[in-house]
Amino acid sequence: MQIEVYQDIACPWCRIGKRHLANALESWQGEPVSVTYRTFFLNGDIPPEGYDFRQYMRAKGGGSPDLEMWFDAPRQMGAAAGITFNFERIEKAPNTLLAHRAIRLTPEDRRAAMIDALYDAYFEFGEDVGDIEVIARAAERAGVDAAALRAQLATDAAREEVEAEAREGAMRGVSGVPLFVFNGRYAVSGAQPPQVLQQVMERVAAMETAKT
Image (spheres, rainbow, N blue to C red):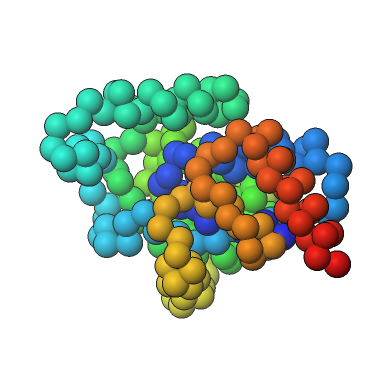
């Protein structure tokens, strides 16, 4: 079974969804599963230097939302999944193009770890994941050659591929994340609980078997 996961590093629900999928796969006893992470930009128009995080979030909410109420839901759901969110540490809403390029340039067998390290950098440490040195430190934690990755990111390596993937997702109708696409046919959106994802996997496997 092939699962494509559309996600963005600046999306707390994507982080939770990734953990939920990992938990679902731990107890999955069906056919082998391959997971591929796809690029999505929550806001590709953020400049490279980023925006002030709280000002940006307030603007997204119409000017004066209670941010702590917004943050409470992912905090609670994250805690239930063993994930920590320290929104109070975040100063910048980042442009995530560099982070997505880093993910694409990471060897496939370390890609999931790299994504987790970038999520940690942003949501736990409050670091700017649009900064090449922050990404390099995340690479070290993920067991990736940070010096080689830094050198590649200093060029335009993987930029075209990442931007093309985001455009392809838009053409497929991806408008929000996380989005899980099973065998290229069946899609489930949102940070669904592990049991829901596993139920979808069971249904997809049964439907695919019925076709043969």
